[in-house]
Image 1 (spheres, rainbow, N blue to C red):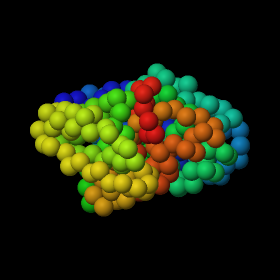
Image 2 (image 1 turned 180 degrees about the horizontal axis):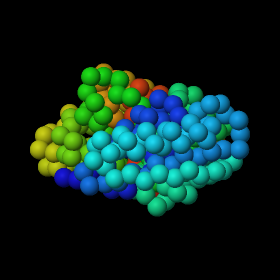
Image 3 (image 1 turned 30 degrees about the vertical axis):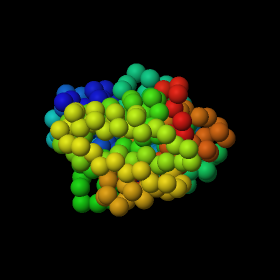
Amino acid sequence: MATPFTSILCGVEGNPASTEAARQAIALAADGGEVHFVAVCTSFELGPDYHRDTLETSLEEAVVLAGKAGVPAATQMREAKYAIDVLLPESQEHDLLVLGTHGKSRASGIMFGSTASEAAHGTEQPLLIAREAPGSDPFPQSILFASDGTAGSWSPARTAARLASAFDAELGVIHVADSGDDRHSVLDEQVAEIEEATGAAPELSRPEGHATKEIVETARAKGASLIVAGRRGLRGIKALGSVSERVVSSADCSVLLIPAGEDASKL
């Protein structure tokens, strides 16, 4: 089964986080896809990682990595006041936007401008926030799918299943129950469909407690290199209540956000 992403946009800078983002974008495009690398030269003095010559070198290095993997790649250098002003509109022309992240400060990112944080609550497309795999399994060999048990979680469920099938990856499912939670039918159907797609029944965890904490700690315990979750597309201050965005900032591993349906709950 091919991966869900055939045209991937990856933002690059001259730093290790950017290089890891490029590696993961290439991995996801390895079966018939292509990657478009873009660097944005901003109008602010943001340090040596953002100098034009550094950005050009980063683009060249990304193309070399893609070539070694046999993945077609294109590059472009853009100029803008903010990188996000280029990346969000450009991402509409692709299946997936991939970005690296420098840290885990979610609140400051939303308020003051971290590109990864802005993308997490601004994009309407699938988004991968890339981090180096924390365990021994390389990206994306160990996947945790976080389901809220609503009909809106089917798109991320099927994406997780396709990735697990394409990479022969281990896939687990977590649903953090709250009081009065009665979403067993959707969860059972998702587990059954994942088993049919991958040939292996996923382990289903149903802990109670704080959703972000349980998802992040379960991923850590499993040594997951990727968390897949849905998102509702909350904006501005409302984004502070989004479980999926809290997972993005708190996780030790990469997080893939897939737009959920209108009936999605907290994810």
